[in-house]
Image (cartoon, rainbow, N blue to C red; front, top):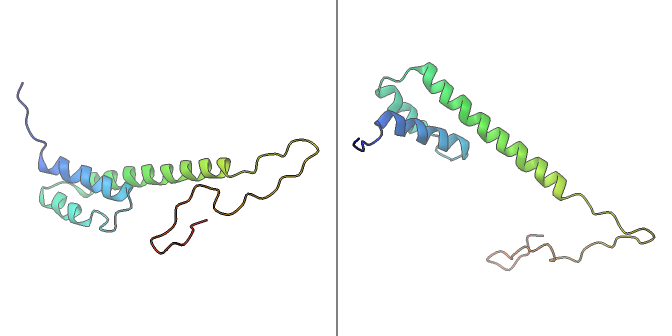
Length: 102
C-alpha cells in the first residue's frame, strides 16, 4: 500500500470545518470557493458547515457549563462566614502594561 496525499477537496473540507469550529476571522470562505471549483455540491458543503458549527457551539456550551460549575462559591464551614478572596489571588498574570486581569 502506498501513501497518497489527500485529495485537495478533502483538505479544503477539513480546513473549512476547522476555520468555522475555531471561529477563525477568515471564516473558511476561501475554502468554499475552492470546494465549488472542485465540483463539491452545495449540499456537501452545507453538511460540513453544519457539523463544524455544531461542534463549535457544543464546545462553547461545555466550556460555559464547566465555567459555571467551577465558579460557584465554595460553602463556608459551619459557623464561619466566607471572606472575599483578595485581588490578584486568582492566578491571573498582568497585561503588558502591568494591569491585572482580575
